[in-house]
Amino acid sequence: MSTATKTPERPPTGTRAKPKPSHAGRPNSTPDAKTCQQPPALLISSRQEISEFFTCCPHAQTLTAWSDLLQSEILVPLGCRQWSCRYCAELKIKQLSAKTRDAKPNRMLTLTVDPKLWESPRAAFDGTRSQVPELVRRLRKKFGEVEYLRVTELTKNGWPHYHMLIRSGYLPHTLVKDHWAELTGATIVDLRQVKKTFAAYKYLVKYLSKLHKIEWTERHVSYSRSFFRPDPRPPKPDLKLSTKNLHNFHPVTVCLEYYELGTLRKLDQTLYTVTPNLTPQDW
Image (tube, rainbow, N blue to C red):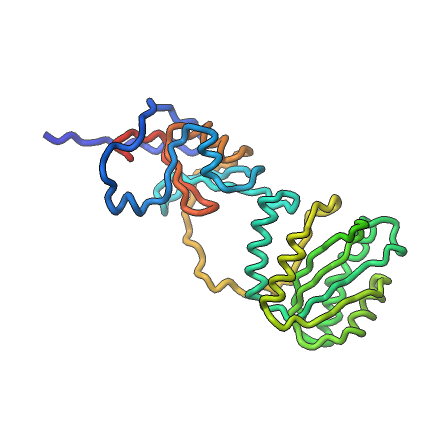
């Protein structure tokens, strides 16, 4: 005589699921091919185990929602994306470096400021940062395409200067120097050709890896609209999200608060599925 198994209803996202009795783990059976193909899973019970399962920003907030595409609750860690956060900074360095390699810049330009002309490093930054795109505008007017990525760095004495990776045709050093002196009063400009894409990649990683907190800005990097090439990869599928909730708590806290004794599955670095309160026959 067969007994029908009732499928548990999906609790609304953002509401605390009613805990069910804990169980020792998976039944003693050999997993089939379908089970082996499933992403890594974790029973939500121990804060330490959940913390080790997540790889995300320590200051992350959490988005939860229902995905019609996956037919599951999802959990998305939302990092702070601040350069002062080591995790987010390293992630942005990897992403920017890969995109810059594909952008194929062929020149590196370093623009300095003259400390004698400014009351403080902050004043120098405020007075020169807007002159970078103005310099590029002048160069484009005369030479055509000039696309750039700019990294702000501080000297040992705390004064800002700008490293730029550029994709352009020929740019005369003297003309660039004269324009920058006219715009900012600074006369030290270094312009050199980057003959290999990998060299540009190394330059960027070098400067980004040296970044440290700048008290008066979190915008360490900027770039022109067309510097990066279009991403050739197909767009990610629409997850068809509904019942979205933004929690001002780290994903570990959200898991323990709303999904205790449920199952967490890692699809990639930024996407997890959550199944609340599984019973043994659901494993």
